[in-house]
Every structure is written in structure tokens, then in C-alpha cells.
Image 1 (cartoon, rainbow, N blue to C red):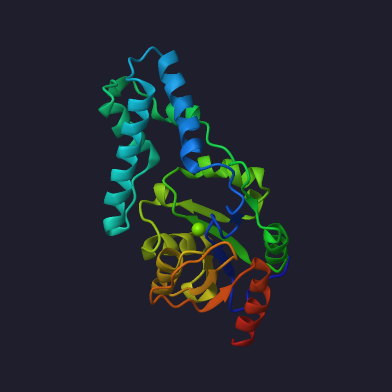
Image 2: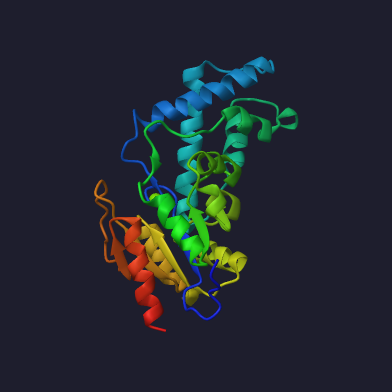
Length: 255
Ligand SMILES: [Mg+2]
């Protein structure tokens, strides 16, 4: 592995969904996916002999708890954890708090890869090339789940071992575009903002946040997405990850 000691850019950070992972082939819809996982939770609790409302009621109460949590979190770009949402929801269902093992409930939820979703064709080759060039590689995702749940997907897609740092907003307590989550990743990677670039597909979250944090921003704009910039200005725009490599070469030339 090359040493980047005397190079300007030392770390490349990525968003996860629609940046490293291509959601354009999603089969079915996310409501069906979430229903399946909540059926797992329902079966787990029923087997533990909790008294539960009918599944439709259970599911609707979970949805409304989740939507309310997101709405509240977005006001300040703070974040609450999936464990907290699940606990609030189960208490609202009338379950007894002292007996609840939320980690066991999250394991029973059994999050896994979603049919039709896969890395982009160039994701693994680009990560391999970055790693071989000595870049540190990070991931920051706005996800309510703890990282161990999203690791299930990263492991299945062969991405996990490339990552030196990976953060979900659910674990950190802030979500993009709040600069704290970027600075936290940089601190863990031991690099300065001007030594990093951030690649993401959402202008209002990924790009605005990277700009505010002082990181060179790259908008990932694959053909299946049409995101509005709404005044947000990325430093670079790409439609494929492999376009990053000449951008990095250009940035080194500006040293
Ligand atoms: Mg994304």
C-alpha cells in the first residue's frame, strides 16, 4: 500500500445508499420489506408471550412512531436510535419496559439485504483502487439503524472490509448535513477536513453538510436519480464512481 504522508488528500468518505449501493433495481417496495421485518418482531414477542394488538394495529403504531421520530430529528438534524424508536413503540403497545430486551428485539427484526439492490458495477473496483493507493476510506449514512444492522448489507456486498470507519447517524446522534457527524468520522480517521473528500447523492444532506464541514464535496448523480440542487453547490459532480479517480489526481495536482 502506498503512503499518502506527502499527498494532499488522505481520505475518501462515502454516503451508502445510492452512492456505493445501487437502489435502482429495488424489487417491490420498502413498505413490504418493513412489513416482513415487523412480522419477525411480532412473532418474536408473541413467542415470548407478550399480549399484542392485532398485527395491522401493531404495524400502524410502529409506522407512526417512526415517522414522528424522523420528523422530530430532522428539526435540528439530531437523530434518535432505532432502539429508542422500538422501545417507545413497544411501550405504546402496552408492553412492560423492565422485561424488554431491545437488542434481542432488533436481532429478531432480522435486517438483511433487499432484493434487487446491489453495489454499482464499479463500486468494488474503485474501493480496491483507493485502498491500493493508500487512501483511508470512510462511510457515513443517515440511517436510524445501529451500524451492526447495516453491516449485514455491507458484508454481503463485499464492501465492509474496505472501510476504515463507518458511522450511522443512529449511533452518532447527528445526521448529515450536521457537520458533527463528518468531523467525528475525520477524527476517527485522523485527517483534517481539507485532506478529505465526501461523495454522496443528496445535495441537501450529503453535499451541503460536506461543504459546511470544510470537505471537498462530490455529488454522485447516477442516471436513475434526479435530485434538485436547490442552491447547493458541489465541488464536483459524477455519474459513476470511477470518475472519482481523475478528480483525485486533479486535486493532488493542486497541492
Ligand atoms: Mg444516499
